[in-house]
Image (cartoon, rainbow, N blue to C red; front, side, top):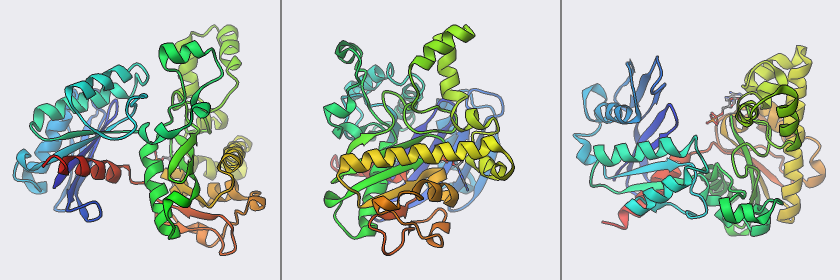
Amino acid sequence: MNILVVNCGSSTVKYQLFRMEDEDRYEVVARGIVERIGIPGSRLEHRSALDTFVEDRPVPNHRVALELVIAALTSGKTRVLSGVGEIDAVGHRVVHGGEKFTGSVLITDEVLEAIRACADLAPLHNPPNILGIEACQELIPGVPQVAVFDTAFHGTLPEYAYIYAIPYEYYEKYRIRRYGFHGTSHRYVAERAAKMMGRPLAELRLITCHMGSGVSFAAILHGKSIDTSMGFTPLEGLVMGTRCGDIDPAIVFFLMEKEGLSAKEVEEILNKKSGVLGISGISSDTRDIEDAAPHNHRARLTLDIIAYRAKKYIGAYYAILGGLDGLVFTAGIGENSPYIRKSICSGLEHLGILIDDERNTVRRKEALISRDDSRVQVMVIPTNEELVIARDTWRIARGMR
Ligand code: ADP
């Protein structure tokens, strides 16, 4: 089965074409990204097993972007399909599934309507996801289209973990609650961790640390997410590239008053100018911060704050899990930064977390980085959200044949 996985952001379309025999036997035959959609400088970067090309050309909207993707798959030197009719199903990443979707679903008119209704909760993310779905329905008609939600894996959070201590009526009226994000990634690495540990996921207590430009941790008990650091929006939780994570909400009102800012302006500061960028004043990329740290106090401070806050979440999740079997690092920072992994784990020896410095030099591949005498197995596991989307799409589409 040929499955196209599509991930539409506000100005990007990322995609991969999977050729799947079954869940474990597959090949990625093409992949790429369309960037700067709707803004000057847009381009397509496409790679297939046969050839690679970059094309700079105006891409006014998501529909045109997907037309280019289909042309790259079905024509020229990168042609891996004889026509669009060879695509058997399309899997879409959808950021917010609200309370309604706790698993992946076939997209019907009702489902699309429900995804639209969730757009209120994710005004930046769901609208481009919807544009991608609509464009694919037109361009690749008559095949199953499946939605895989970032929030779905956290649908198992208990009520006491997702209700905020604000008047309950706001939950009833607006569905203000913790949803959590990066669910596809947490789910994937948890499953891989169980395989690496050679134990059933249903027996394990895991903490999964997704550390990319967005950062979220999840406490996973017996395969189910029981808590996660992102909340109503991806702004809550740990220190991120440009997002502040947890702060005292009173800071918002203080800033509005002292600086004469509107709610929108403060939201922009907390989402785009805070986190690693805000503390360091250098960059949102931790690579730049690691480079600057030897001679710059604020760069060092940034790294110290990242590690300190990560330790606090690990401690909290250790407590609610009733112990810990595995700790997993994934995404850009988690897969690539031995320094940050080490600084998070050092001082946690009393929890049974013992890092092996030699093993911890690993980048971008699955590896155990704890010592053999460590009670908790610490792992690096590159995430693969696209594979989860392809597998869920395969399962749903296969059932329809
Ligand atoms: P996104 O959340 O945008 O998908 P990624 O998971 O790719 O992001 O993570 C991006 C972040 O990962 C970068 O901002 C950078 O801080 C960090 N990163 C990526 N590669 C490396 C590396 N080789 N060493 C250290 N940090 C890295």
